[in-house]
Amino acid sequence: MLLSAAGIFHWERDGVSDREIESVSDEMVEIGKLIDNASMTGSQETPVHDGWEVVIKRSQLIVWRRHMGQHNLYEYKVYGTFNDISATAFYTTQLDLDFWSGWDRQTMAIHIIDQDQTSNSSVIHWVYKYPYPMYPRDYVFVRRHKVCQKSKKMVIYAKAVDHPRCPELGSYVRIQQYQSKMVIEPHTTFDENGFDYCLTYFDDPQTHFPSLCYNWLASTGVPDFVERLHCATVEMQRRMQRGYHPNVQTGSRSEQHNGSIRPAVENYC
Image 1 (tube, one colour):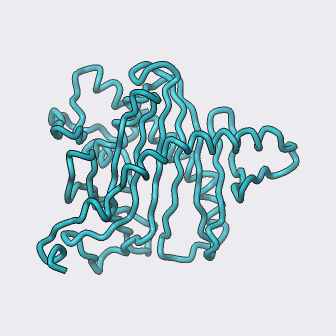
Image 2 (cartoon, helix red, strand yellow):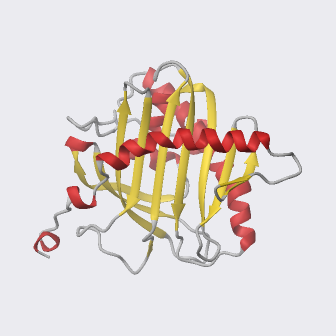
Image 3 (cartoon, helix red, strand yellow):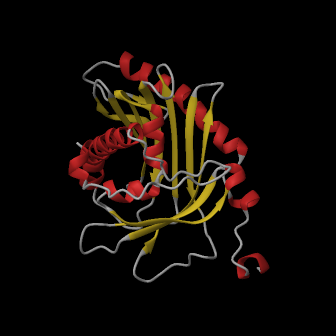
């Protein structure tokens, strides 16, 4: 109670632990099993493994979903590969919140409310636009990221938390259940073009969407987001090659961007 009253976040208790961040690397092992199962299953069947059902299968993108045991709630797993952008640019695009707010048209606001530089962790408040007449959703989540030089992986782990500096507001619907795990594995080096990635994602939008909406999310919404993220990464890589310094927490300091104006999202493609 005293910690909450003072506005202090308990990093050891509520942050992303070493065990959690290290477990993200194992997502690629799970993905390998799912890909093998999808390849062995006949084309007339819907491949299912450990509850994971293939909903999209393309040459550079596979999406699975798994029912969470609640009404129309699914966890999603996305596997993809890109050959025209680097792992570093893809990783940085997701960590630079100033840049994020410029390319994700559904983001109304996103900012850091607390951080722990020793663990590369931040608590972030994110306000996300929902279709009218629904209220916008807001997320408060702790995010930790790590570059694993030995295993050649970049990982990002985020999960919903409560923070005393960010109480719920009546103008938004607070998302209480949210988790996102990303692992990025370069084909050669972090800075050369070419990498595979895996994203495992779940949230409870606090509303009852009809089944058709969830089918649309899986078949259209996820690929659309991946393509917009790819376009944004292309722009990030161009900027970094021109000397842009991303606003990314590094553990020792927080690099500031160069103040350049962000172009509209359509200019990224």
